[in-house]
Amino acid sequence: MSKDKSPQEDEEPPEPALGPMGFGILLGTTALYAVYVGVPIAFGGPASMRFLTGPSAFIPIAVYLAAAVVLAVRPRTSRWGAGLLIGLGIFTLLGGGICVGTLAAQMRA
Image (spheres, rainbow, N blue to C red):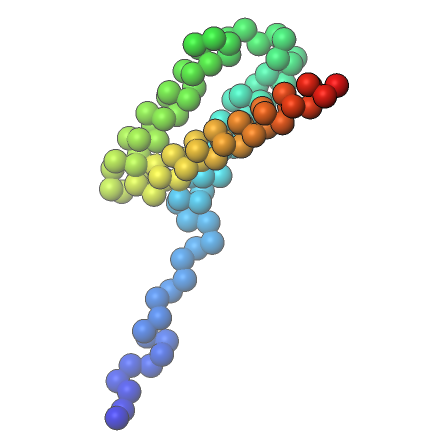
């Protein structure tokens, strides 16, 4: 029994370490935290931020979500969109944990 193909021909080339989905996760999570944490710090703290209070706080997330869904639906950019949607989930879970931790620390003090 002879081999027609060498073992190297059967293997697929490795995917890049940070593909479109990973880059979308990293970019999306970073962008959301920049808007909700970085902008208030840049403008002098949460007390001086009036445009990210109430219902207007959901406008950046709505725009982000709309862009991520549009990218996820198109076959050519579906991995980018999926990464952005996963990034939104990470932002929500991590942000909720940070919020609960901060509130718990304030209750102790």
